[in-house]
View (cartoon, helix red, strand yellow):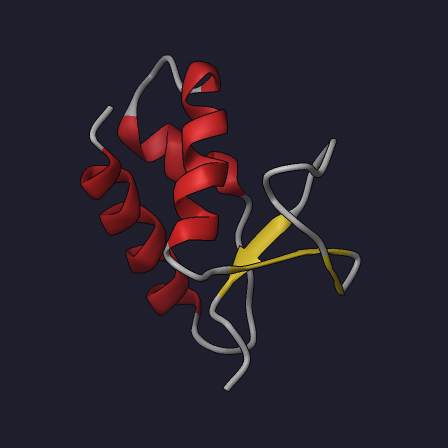
Length: 77
C-alpha cells in the first residue's frame, strides 16, 4: 500500500475527529483494505511520520514500539 494513500486516510480521520477526539489506527486500515490487518505496521509508521499524536489511556506513547491498542489524534497545539 502506498504511504501517501495511508497518510491521506489518517489525516482525514484526524481532521474529521477534530482536536478533542481520537481514532483507532485500525479504522484507517479498514478504510484502505478489506484485508486490513497486514497494513497495521505501515499505518502505525505513517501515522508517526505525519506527526499524529499516539496515546493509550491519555498518555503519549511511541506508535512504533507500542504493543497493543492505542489511539491517534491531531497533535496538541
